Image (cartoon, rainbow over all chains, first blue to last red; front, side, top):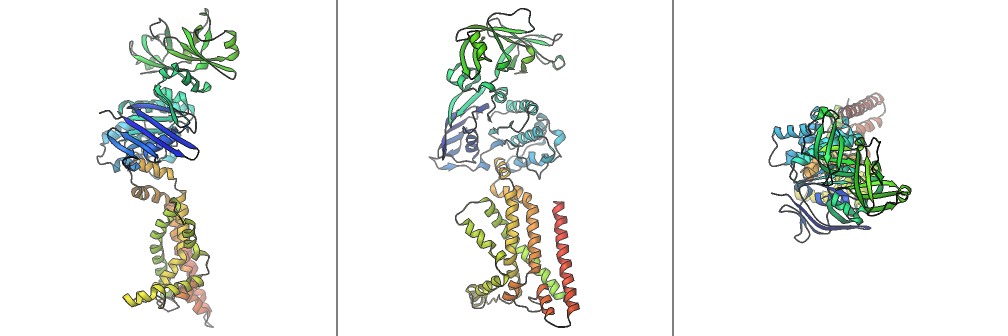
Length: 366
Length: 218
């Protein structure tokens, strides 16, 4: 059965209101929006820590809240897993006891096999007898994630799970979240104000601004929409494209990916010793907009391994920067200085080449 | 040597701490976590014995529980229980005077527990009661133990309210401070007085060292 989460609520506090009418499918949805837009309040309403003034929250056929039916299931009976920004591990309990805490309140207890699975998936076996005070930020978040999972949630909420972590720790935890979401068939909502972090986890985005949902769709689709293109913070965007592997060259450590029917190819570097890539399988690549160079013509005699032809579909100027949305068979956001954009006369429908180094690409198998 | 007074003092102090602690834990939690109308008034009322002269507290207790008092008369007429000037009165006087110290310590300890951890516990399926017993209480334990020792020590030193409400009856309400006071009134008892003072210092010292040890273990 599909665990859909249906939300139709309005919530208000002096100087703040939140109105949501959305359905969240199983899998990861990134809740993205500026600070104070209502992202955390939405999670708190779902978990039962806040009570909406009107509406309903329903997971599957289970009504968690309904103002009409005067129903408000208390948070401990909702089975909503919540991973908090700071982990919130219980400091007086060992990692093992933290992990098993929620399980002791469930009617059906986990087998040691399930515990082992979570421990191995999150790579926390070596931490099991330690206390939270002795864990690093990334370890704490992994344990918090495991603890939420072992309480058998029907919905999983992650509130800014990366904000307390530095960049390298973020890169460590993202694959774990991805892996976990892969074997759960429940809605997973991740709140973040950092778009690149979300994009690395999911394509599905729900954009909230000033307490209302302005869009809820796949990232590629959202990019086509001029209004939404404008919502993306200029210095906080990331390109995310899923392409098929055309060939794998282990000698050069290079993978060639097929574009979308326009004959263009994208070359990606990989570590041959970690070679688990197969021709025909899919790969997701990430590329920062400011790592793309726009050129009017193909350039010879350069070290760029990727020169992809496209057409500008949208431009957006903000201060000294200019964002161009380029259709290369797949959408790419490129960032150039406004001066450069004016010099090249970049505007809608201009044909351009997107140049980027293989080293600028971050890739992962899908 | 007044062994009776020493035993009585310890008995009163232990009973005081045991009676006051659960009440202090519940009220400390409510004061730390809940918002309700008249909270400031309730808090001021509970802390009143801490600042009132102990004699005043004893007098008020007498007005309340005395033979002609509001509750005292009813207790005597309905159940034949006489409270004032009994061992029970010594425990009540000691409890009322020590209670603010215990509740203060417990409340601060509860406030120090991050409410976010309680939220996390509820999100994992623990009811508010289970959350209280598994998260709040263990995390507030050092403060609660501190309150217990503070209440115990205050009870050992209690004089004013006890002598007013419970009297100075040897073997029944004459605790260590009262025994010291009684000895001081009699000329030529300086040695005995000093011995009792020494015992009083030793008991208090052991209580504090004990609490420090328990605190460190926690």
